[in-house]
Length: 112
Image (cartoon, helix red, strand yellow):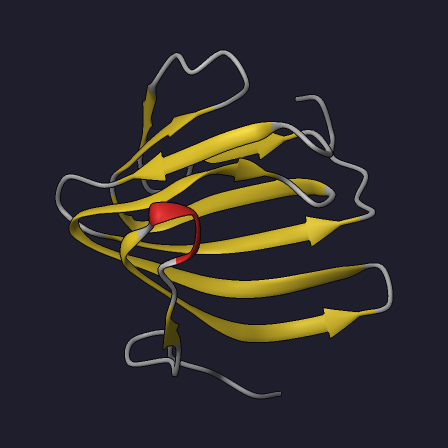
């Protein structure tokens, strides 16, 4: 068994899609999906862009304001997950800061 701390997990700044205060660090990779740790600073944004595959954002710490193809913002917090379908335009913002796991690729996600 290994235990990893996501606090201080290495990441690189990313300003694609007019993002700000956003960093991403690779956590795992398989042929059909990847898993990354994302962080947003307070007031940060991951700018609107299309999902490359089904995408899951699981909030670990902080707050997220997420929107999908219709742009209606929804606030989610720790223990909650946003799911976007392949090619769906989406955006994530945080007022206080965010640490989340993102899994993207060829995924089956339960409907419950």
